[in-house]
Length: 220
Image 1 (tube, rainbow, N blue to C red):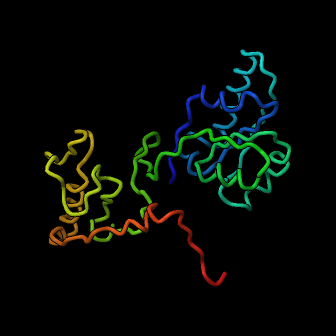
Image 2: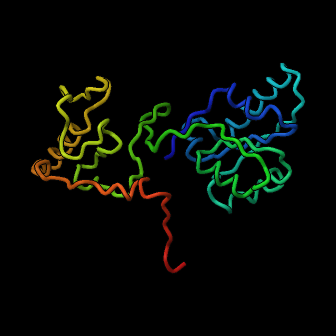
Image 3: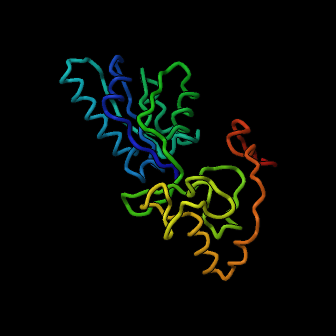
């Protein structure tokens, strides 16, 4: 899932306060799971913005709504009337959703309410951890399912650096050494010999270094 975090309230207010009408628009999938950008959060943020407007004597009409996903066309149909009549939109989606809305409504200002942070998993209901950087060339099959790109601070591909100690990263004792996790996992799988295999130099052109990526299904 994509993890995001709401921007500081003052930053959000600064972006939208000069409009006469604003729609706070939730995205009810990834960022709703992390309690930052769903329809419920859109309702709460809209209320906070109305209170701020009242406090500062700013005349602005603030509506709120949302859809299941702001990155797919079919979901927008239910919100067409709301968005068509909006002077400005405060999107509570990740950066993908914000850009998607901006492309659909070319003449409408669209602002991000969140900072998109990483691709992660749900460790607990309130704790999310980074697991993937979408580098375009997955090597989890040879690292015991532990990603050194996202979990090793130095992105090392062939064993730990000299700074790891007692299974912890030298950057922070709170962080597990990614390569210790790789070894533990390979040992559990009875494939510890794989640790000795040398991973070739990574082709970073499949990462962002190659520019914006796309994927098109053939035959559709």
